[in-house]
Amino acid sequence: MNAGRFPRISVNRVRIFTLGVLLVASCQRIERGSESAAMERYRTLWNETHDAENEFYTMFKYSAAEGLGFEEGVTRRDPSTVVKVGDKYYVWYTKSCGAPVGYDKATGKLPATNWDLATIWYATSLDGRKWTEQGMAIGRGEKGSFDERSVFTPDILVAEGKYYLYYQAVKAPYKRRTKNVIAMARADSPDGPWTKAAEPVLKPGKSGQWLGEEDDRNKVKVRGAWDSLKVHDPCLVVRGGKYWLYYKGHPMGMRFGDAQGKKGIDFAMGVAIAEKPEGPFIKSKLNPVTNSGHEVLVWPYKEGVATLVTRNGPEKNTVQFARDGLNFEIKSLVTITPHAAGAYRSDAFTNTKWGEGITWGLCHLESTSESPYRFLIRFDCDLSLKGERPGFKRWPPRTKIETYFQKGNKLE
Image (cartoon, rainbow, N blue to C red; front, side):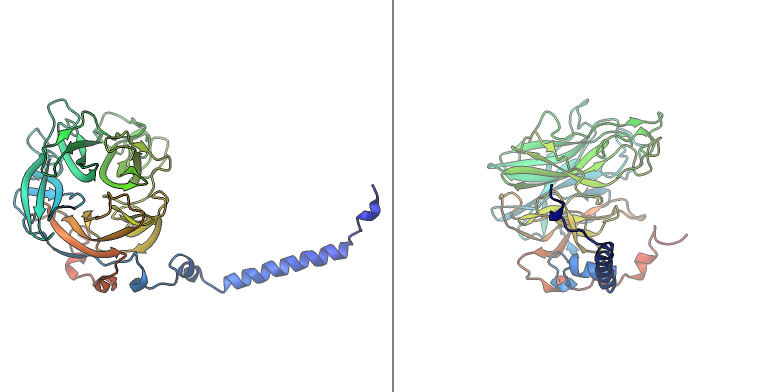
């Protein structure tokens, strides 16, 4: 080989080149250092928008849902998606009677919680504000069945000319360690009658191992999957011709870790996808698709899926969006969010390629020390492409003194 083809590079030239690279890098660091991390987020995450310009930001405003309001001795909670059939709106919800006494004192007639010993009822409305309760849609199962103890937290799917109710179910006895499943029933009319599927359509993930015999959900030897204890709060969209069932998962052993000190997520959302409304539903390998949240609300938005993430976890009280329906990113921070929101999602089941968003729905009010009974109210918002409600893009109202001194906030 002819060494003359490779000119000799002097040590001085290498030093000068290296110094030049370092100077450029130093200048770049100085330039980047002239902007705070907050301002970088303002440019890249928030796109230099104010709340009024952010399509994912909204206030939530509330009003009565006449006919579904407070009733002594009765709980109505966890409303489904609101659907319109002809000139009527329909909603399904959990209904139970009697004050909850806790898991340790519960009996065959005394509920542990206000979703225990429950059934699923429904109501109709002509305007979304005045509602008429129509009766029970889904009752508890026969003795020994997987839904013997309670059926609750429903959502509706309209597909192929039929109606499908998906709901949480629990067997007896109902304890802290009892596993929950998602069941399904089908009808030709929103008024029923409903025919239950013989088996759940979604079950908890890979099981962990309890530590000891005490009925304590926190004590585990092995946590298992992120949804090893409960799958619940179904919410469905039709996307790409398939049925996407979003749900909340709970692990065996909450956030405190197992006997080896291994911690994990407590509240999160996953999704399972099926070719048919009856299933089988296959859980996504990316589950969980959020790291926070409580009750599940998703809706088609533009080419993707939006979700309201509330109450629990590091990303609570946010609206998030995923173009692929799986990889969610924070788009806005929100306050005074609805509990267990069931929205009117006009295009949730139309296989739309450009979702319009949501503007209203129903939710429940939490129980208080004065009354253990929950009831339904209406919420309004502006999470729609139509952008016809500028009053919902304002700052939220200041918190009143009663909130600061309510139970849980007040330092006793």
